Length: 173
Image 1: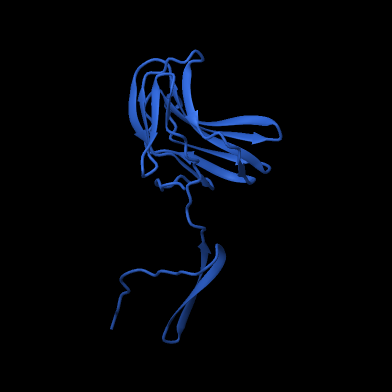
Image 2: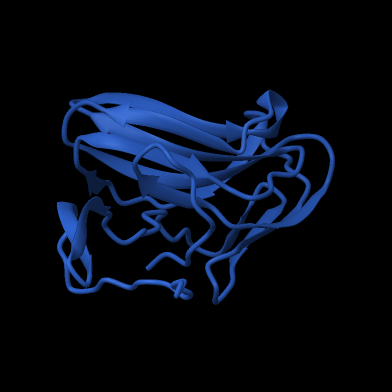
């Protein structure tokens, strides 16, 4: 008689790391290596609502950022973002979004020992995800920018997470 297993297996209560799972049926057992991943957390920092150089930035209850207007900035772009320098441990990170209309950029400012680097998502270079490595403990800020030129009216869902894989959006704290 053949029986097939249908459904799934859920494992809870394990801490992230490598472990194994042993399955036994009668006298036959099989040990399967398993890697338990930490929960996916969106590390994007909430930006304040406000208007900068003709562009209004509004954060919705689900964390989406509505961007509307036409930038009139003298430097070529209107930016809105977090202003606190939040600690960022050394490691690998991925910044992503599901959509990025023309004229809008998302970026993370990483400050390490007085040196500032910008990790940018920009539709002009056709990327919706960028992975970067922070070699030592740093601080960071998250920002949305709108280039001067045409009007924009869009809602973005930025995701900043550890690792090299971009996952679906999860609201940030």
